[in-house]
Amino acid sequence: MTFLFRLSLALVVLLLGGCEQSPAPALDQQLYIWQRQWTPAHALALRQSQGDFSMLRVLALQAFPGAGWSRARINPALLKADGRPLIAVIRLDGQLKALDQDEVIAQIQQVLSDWQAQGLTPVGVEIDHDAGNARLPAYGTFLGQLRQVLPANLRLSITALPAWLDSPALPGLLETVDSSVLQVHAVSDPRQGLFDPKQARHWAQRWSDVTTRPFYLALPAYGVALLTQESGVPVVESEVPIDRGGERRELLADPQQVAGLAADLRADPPQHLAGLIWFRLPLAGDRRAWSLTTLGAVARGDNLASRLALQWGEQGGLYDIRLVNQGNLDSPWPQRLTLAVGACDGVDALAGYTLQQTPGLLTFTRIQEGRLAAGSQRAIGWARCTKIDQGGFNVYP
Image (cartoon, rainbow, N blue to C red; front, side, top):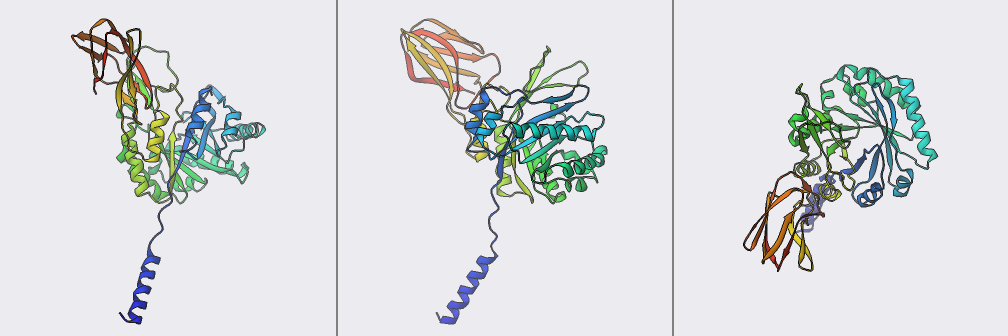
């Protein structure tokens, strides 16, 4: 190989290397905190979420038609100790007939002042207002006025709806804010489900074609119940119970479906997509949210799996029998479980299951729906037996 040929080859390699695009930055992961009343459970949830989520978007203030203004009762000491950047979220109900711009701005300024007095220094304000398309021009005017009175170092963002994609006012509206959060869950008839990954990807791509600013996707990590009414229009029950009888149909965003979309977005992000924001921070005992274990696994892109097993403890021949989830994916209660035992002179099932005893075998059968969070356990029954076979159990989904 001549010197000139080696030199030419080296130049080609350098040129080709220079043409390679640098990898896209990893998508940021953030969390909504949406509880109106903070509890001691927030302390553990905040600690456990530290490693996976960079920023907290905290419900601060809500305006309801007829009911007026309502402050979220946050715990400023916990947020200050947590140390992550904060965005104060202002929820303006979409059913408000009109926005009193001066009143809304005064309320926002008061919240920011109160937060600062409590030692909190938010980096931004997010306006969550489900305005109809006909009202987007007026909404844009309000946002422009708000931008002028907010301190220059505070970012202004909005929660946005896919329906706005059909509005000619959308490009101008997006120019008034620093970023937008496209909500791709619970945006249509709840009877059709909370989330459609293909539709969400389609909306994200269309949004990237309209905006010139960074945008985020708000993804679901929760469920709701639909209460039937005589009119046929369902009432949605979420984290706050509704004191009303009737049938409840539970809907839950499927972690594996959402994880599939998140993986697709990481591999091929639409232009301007800056990150994912998860709704919402789950607390211990939150029956309509993914566990924090499952949420963290989805956010990291881990492989998801439930590992259900039976465990028991014995004292004086009395066994308490527990169902455990040793995986990272929340699981429905299994339909049936069997356990090999010796002679038993007393057995019973606990809430959610019935028990059938046959020679050498206990069979637990589910009689109501429920979920077992990843990493948790629940008692399903007890038995007074001579022995229980350590490996003699089966779980049937």
